[in-house]
Length: 189
Image (cartoon, rainbow, N blue to C red):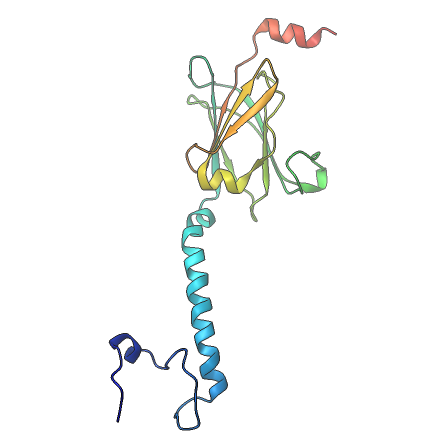
């Protein structure tokens, strides 16, 4: 006498989560017991990989510069972007850890497109001598690709505030361009 089976269970070639006895035909007991674990492992791995596919496909990030007062793009700004692998974002950048170094100008929209190195670096550092800040803190590449980063520089406290609310794959830096008077004050002791 056979017990009724569900339609899904009847489609599987081997019953899962059941103990094999000597009466059951087909594969040996060791193979059948291990099959259920492999199916669960494959399902868990695929459910983890599906949300990560956009991260694997995107190989560039955009850095945009805006003036904090007028919120207009900062055009024709010389920018340096360093990609590196290190232990912490606040440690000094050693030459052996640098993966890529790019020096370029922003376009009419205040944007720089940075091609990420293979394999993906851990951190990105953005700097410009024409801005009030000396450079950004180390930014995690995975945060930028997942949700984007918005950085605002505070002149009085000389600190950065960071938010993870930008567009995925974009670093938005809100800082002001140096005036002639600011450059003179930097040079005076």
